[in-house]
Length: 250
Image (cartoon, rainbow, N blue to C red; front, top):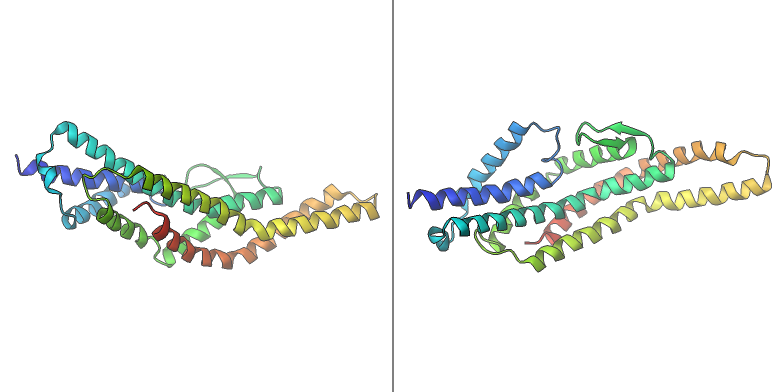
């Protein structure tokens, strides 16, 4: 029993960090993936990491109360890692939301089969394209690399560095807002130019119905700018991988 308990506790600690991380990031947390597959993936990944990750010596002597505290620490660290990844993943969705507001399509909602929540057509399209680009570039392998790296800087049973976790999350949030506006900036500039042109046209031709003309023009301009935005999303995939290595609190 004295030999089995530390090994079982080590497995539970690895499972806690894995489950907290993958439950809080997109792709793996979407309702479209069956729960049985999620559980099977978590167990397989946990078995692998529990084999290659050594247990600290003090794990052998801790009691039930200390074990509960250590499990809580693992859950906190896993959720912090997942939150940082989620913020970087939401860049495309936030940029798409800004684009939809400029196009006037923010009220047109559809059912997103991936997340199980209402969503807009443009954000669904751009998010699916971004996911396909991530998988084509094998960026999802970075998630496993990040977990492996976390066990070097934050071994099993150690207390998480709250300052480091907060700095990583704040940095990811800052990059999320900055990159979202950078992706949506061309459409914002084009929409501003269109509004200026329509304002001048309304002064030159007062009888023209500007509202009736502006709506299809804004939608058409938005679709054209979305088409020009797709190549830049491919470059953001590389930036996404770079930011994961840079900003994750490890």
